[in-house]
Image (cartoon, each protein chain N blue to C red):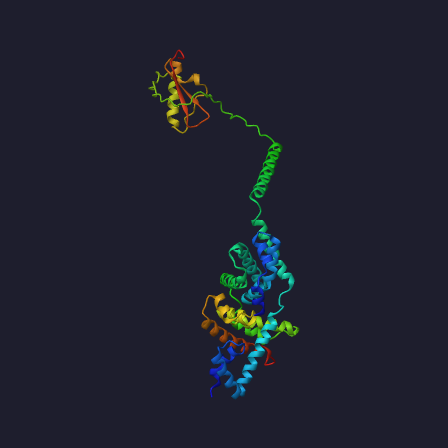
Length: 185
Length: 199
């Protein structure tokens, strides 16, 4: 939540300069929001290459729509566009690794991996097991820290639907992570 | 008590996603049920682990790569039209100069005229339809009779042109001559009919 609130308080300097056509101002704006966009895209798409392509598209859309956007709602706009771009990308590209394969990989964790690498791998495999809408809901709510209402706006859905998707996703993720770490969590 | 029906509400309660009344209800249940308290703690650990894995997963170089790609695209799209036109014009001039250089260095080929002699009539641009004159065969002499007979025997495919046009029948007998003029255009053929005086 902290990220979202922080990103919502857009400083007038960089956004204003970017709107005036200043590339340095736009670069500053990108730096401020790049973690939001790329990290969300990475969790929604499951690989860095696609996430970078999606981020590029999101920022180009931002540049084209900069004059129309209200700085106070910029982060919300970026989440919504990132979700839409990632969903479009996900439909065009090959499907994510099937659940059965992800479970087979999880059954034999990498021996030499560090604890941090193991956590990344577990998160990635767990998210792959979720349906697209469930994954989006849990990424925005549990990883990015948006409120249920903000998630609903970003997904173009109702709060009740989002709450249902979040609860089901948490049950699945908890079961998978306990299975993955052998109840070490 | 069947604790299975509490699972999803406990999952929502773990991150404060339940409205006030439902949250209080879950807390009352957790106070009474040790198994569900353990379940709630498992959800908290699961969420902590996911957030820890999500944080700091991307190196700064990956952000920089995206930024560079976006700025390059914007700069390419925003280049003034006259600069783009200047670049295209320069490329066109370079291509033309290269082609001219290649043409100069290429050896010129001499076009040799065809071996068959032709009567060139460059002035003749219109086709004049002239009725074909009646072919009048002169009374054959002995030698002529022989040649006509052999020509008839040989058939149309074996018929040969006379070697010398002056030896042809009509001219020898003083009748009208038909001169066939071939032009460079194979579809244009001119027939010239001349009487014995050459008119």
